[in-house]
Length: 442
Image (cartoon, helix red, strand yellow):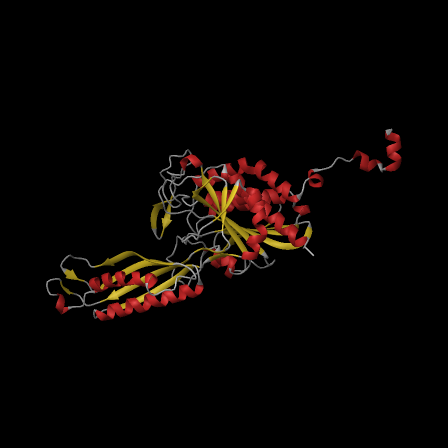
């Protein structure tokens, strides 16, 4: 048919208009494509952040880098949240729910041994003493991934049916400027207390953590309880000082402490119903005495308590207290027990996990179910307030799986190619969740 005849049937504007990416590709596909386009930029950001690590509540340089990037994308940005946190809101072009995405920014007091060209040589104050600092847990990757996700979603903001809240959080590993006593909050718990999930109210939250125990680009997830709660256990055993040659003239807190350590092994193995969820009780330090032939007045112990269920946690804590106090009393000593709950159990909302699993499966070359992880994460405090999904991203090439250093180790390494999968996963989780909420199934 001649072009003149076509013009009689269709407006000239339609004939001349060329379809745009937004018109031809779904929001999910646009997000997935952006992950590929932004991966090199994310790698560059990660290398920079890795070379300049900062401990909990000291993340000023990282926060400034993040804030400048988010502001350049035209977002509303808050700084100084929960000490050094950065929170930004991306308003979509259409009405809809609010999704939150979280990345933690802090590093660890670990001396790096990787010999990377961008390895850390930074030293900072940790509890009043200067220490070597390293991104030994991969938070540099978390920040770089979320910066890229922010750019990808900002590019399609007019098509977003809802809003996205970006949370760049300090002190997930704990504060570097004080010993946590349970009275002062830090990290996610502090941000929640300050209202980070409100104004506007968040409907769902997503987060990830890199893992050297998984191959590059693989995603592991689990519905329900996923990572353990963590309680800091402190026991002070008081006796009566005497000469080591005359123990009958005093009360030996060293002997009582040894008996307590042994007895605590029965708390999980003999006193706790582990059918609902497993538990772990470990003593990590024992300090007492100043001289080989003096029985001291006091011994101080510390350890950790891990559970996957609030009821089990309460029972284990109570049995630790009773066991330590009664064993000490049998020796004539006294035991004072204090358990500070630093992290809650990370629980992935079952309905949200089931809904978003197909999206995860499209983002990675392989998706597997994760076993329970006895490590802890303060993402748990967000997921106690709103439905959450937290998953693991593999960062170790297959040929290095047998020799890869674990998270928190001086030789911890990240395969940069994994960042693309992380960007794709968080970006498409956001678009797919918002679109599903905007078009509910009838």
